[in-house]
Length: 340
Length: 100
Image (cartoon, rainbow over all chains, first blue to last red; front, side, top):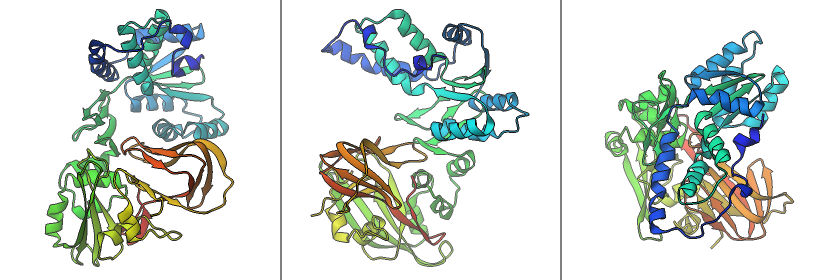
């Protein structure tokens, strides 16, 4: 198969026959329209009648094409198709697609299972497609047939898995965004018609079980603090008010410290001691601090060893067995200069 | 003042290690498991060595650290050890690397 056709990041330069060096105000104003258009197209159903003709053109002959109604369904179909070979492709393939550990595990699977397979996810090319679409609109000349074929592939073959002579294509999901972040606090932010999907809160991925607990708003704060992943923990904290928790746990503020970004905005740090009691079996120390990202309203809560100042706590966080960042060193890190 | 640099959960520590390393113009020194975001160091003249503690980077010219959310930071030429933020888990009573 001519995978490079799907995989090509840029159209060959020879297909571009003219150049625009400066955009007019009107042309600039159209950019958001094309961004929205291609974000929306990412969630439009695939045109199933086109898929066959696309692969016929690529291979020059008929191929068996199986459409999965969802990502889960596609994986189930793949599992059924290879049943009898007693392989555990299902989960491994899921992880493959998800984590894009394509080279390492692909070799592993191929070696172990003696099965030729590969996959492609084309979503990351939508920004290029939107760019070409916009460029065409403002007068850049393209080879029309090639450009249309490129669009057809991206729009109708978003997720494809090739196993032997069979091609599995996945239907496109619905996608929920919040401020350009994958987000939905009731449903999977990426979801298919059969109800399956992938859960996100502000672009942080959750397994369904943890997601359900977090968005219920009833997750005990000690369970929230037990979430290992700091991004998931921070999202979970939004559903359980950290300052309410401080009051409830009768925590004592030991210190606070403020840094200033280059634009003058403040970056706050607090150090709290939570007394031994129902939640902690001994006195526990936590730093709460604003996100370094200027536009963010996130606050992190992270455990530290017993100490009495924010600078001690934060410098401990960035030290290890072989290196010590001193509290003074930490104070010298300036947001927007050598700290971002 | 030492040339420390900090981006998110990664800190760049100036060191005097003598390393050979592999020539690269880009290296990913941190990866967010649930966000997919990466801390990438870009430099035209860089040697990279992977150690048990992390990466050692030898920058012959100015480098730039990028991330999908955080703003870029600039690394002056020099040798840096890449270290990762840690935290204390008061439920498990263990120290661990911050996972994001």
